[in-house]
Length: 283
Image (cartoon, rainbow, N blue to C red; front, side, top):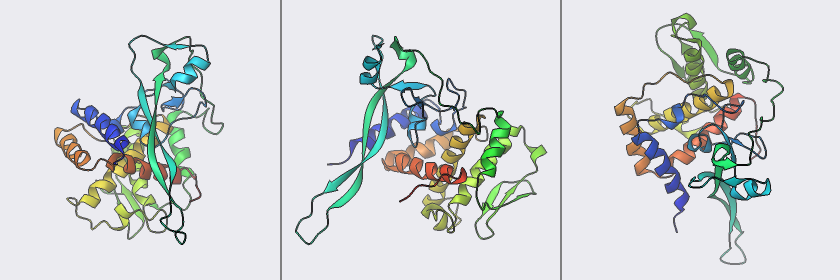
């Protein structure tokens, strides 16, 4: 039986695209200090595709709301949070090993404003970042990147050159704003994480360079989502792409054809964002 959760997630994203909204290009104006949708209980931001499914705010499950003496306001609808759960497939015979595989699951949550008797909480402060203004936050994130690519300011375009492991950007003063500069830099840094000496991401390593290829398009989406995550971390608005009808139509078609695309791409983007910030995971 096909995993219906991928379809639920894709339909939610498609609904946003139909409104002319690109979920991974949201401005990070937030009710939480982290800039992300956050668990009210753990005070930690959600990760992966959940960043694009949920608006910034603080969320609880129905059970958590009851346990903390609150209730859901009449008529309010829940939101979904997705996660992977490891499942086991029984061996067909004694010689075979039991196989483990990730299976996408979900649960329902409500934002604090949808509840009665639940007060908004401050998230756990990140000691290294809590006193830094947005632009210094952006610089802090960039400095966390271990063994980064070279960054060169020259010319009139922005791109990452894998063969040279080099990012080329226009000069800072040519950008319309500092936020736009850092958003663009985050995008190109995201590409660089796919280099074979780093995450060796298939959408970068196997990219033929053709802007019309499916691999190129998927790598661009990874970079866009990664930049969105880092902009959220830096608490700056992501402002480098217009909500063009052609762009939205292109991604609507791709997401409709591949129900797993949005979830798997967001997972790759999360790994890229973690890598830039010096976060390493086993496995």
